Length: 226
Image (tube, rainbow, N blue to C red; front, side, top):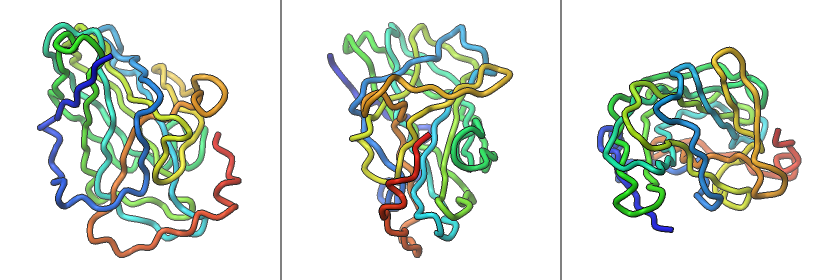
């Protein structure tokens, strides 16, 4: 299987040189999940969540989130609008945090690569600035969701996936979330460390930063990942 990273220039607003440290980050080591295509309703949304606090931390101002995305089976260059929310924990309200929307935006004309050029999935990333967004403190729950509109591709779009072993900063939740147009639900891909639904994302804070992350002691590790 071949891979390629495609840059999304319209969203590369935050300079890599100015990017601060990651407070939540994982890597693609668990395949991919592609629920979006040209027949997907604009009301459909998928989300995920995690946290990076100790339980008694102060609120933290955030810089940006970079989503690891993927497209498969496309035979031409395409585009879509991506409707994004950043939330206080999982957008479903069914996991940690209130689920309240802290920021929302629509990213127009995101380029969807032609996967036939390499004969396999094309991995690419989408960096979304988070202007004025701060966590609510405590465990510093974070979450996000995306939907699509004006989808113009003959391929399938979705998420790069991480396992329980792929988390390098912060803490994942076992389940991702799904909004069917009327209600939210949770899902995973099965049991064990490779069964978690842990979508690839990298959340950064401004550099230089002035806060100190709480120590991830036994209490953090014991926090149940719903």
